[in-house]
Picture 1 (spheres, rainbow, N blue to C red):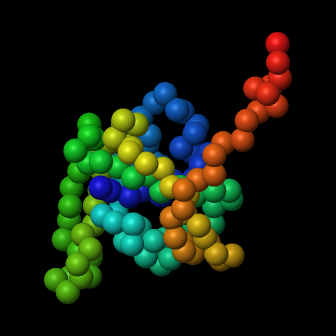
Picture 2 (picture 1 turned 90 degrees about the horizontal axis):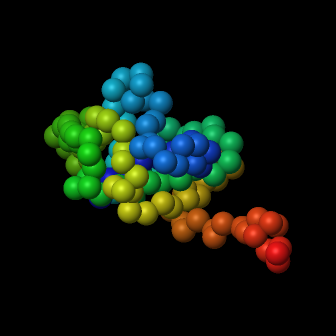
Picture 3 (picture 1 turned 90 degrees about the vertical axis):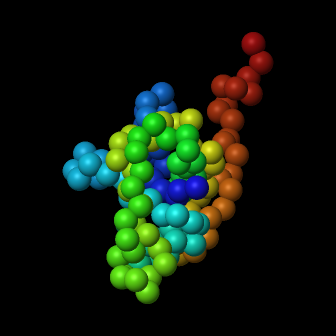
Length: 128
């Protein structure tokens, strides 16, 4: 499984289309992590100043239409975490789970939690 962080509003922006991060347009790839721990570590090292919820997409690389590359760890041979890049948009069928990234007051990631159920709109509770 691969893990990718995305703001909620971007994930929901075009629900019928494959998801594309801004980095796909700028450098042709989307950065991912190989584990929940690696994603949280990256999000702690590089806090995001994102308003609103930040999500972790859990992606099954076997279901992806786009190619995935695993590069040597950035820290050299002593590092165990490879750099993972998806080289195209993420087809939504490859996303097997969506978790919320719980953050502290400075934006550092603390843990992944199941997102709360969506609130029903007032219209859905009306009777015809």
